Length: 164
Image (cartoon, rainbow, N blue to C red; front, side, top):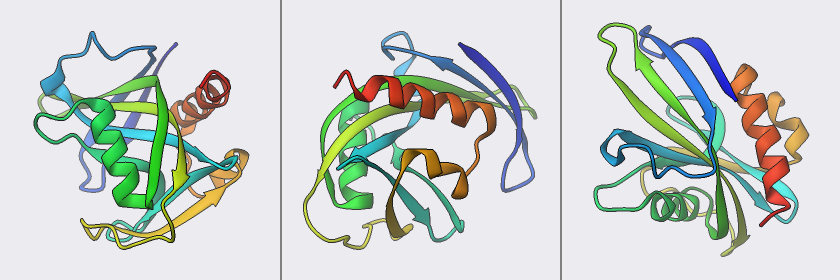
């Protein structure tokens, strides 16, 4: 399924988001993939994080570091941001983020993951995450609303978590 939405970034820049379902990310150019995020399940709840500097809630995840696989990035980010150990993950889809100024683009990858706790929340090494919550998946719009793309990501997460 392909969904296209306009978006205005925090700096006022206009983007186009093109989301597509995917069972693999092998066809995407590695150097164009910048971020991995997960609908991460722990004990039947999903994990959301508060990005303190930006003041908004979102999924756990972050930037791919040079030499990391997408799954290694996701595992590291889940641990750093929420103090959880990723047990398994499956691709949900990806979002192509196109800059309206020059047509440049990059990809953000979306996964469903399962995790277990290492213990209480510890401060994110990057200093960005200031709070972690475990919520019912159907309550996510109380924290963030990514319109049709968010609805599709959550729908796919619900479908796929049972296959893990």
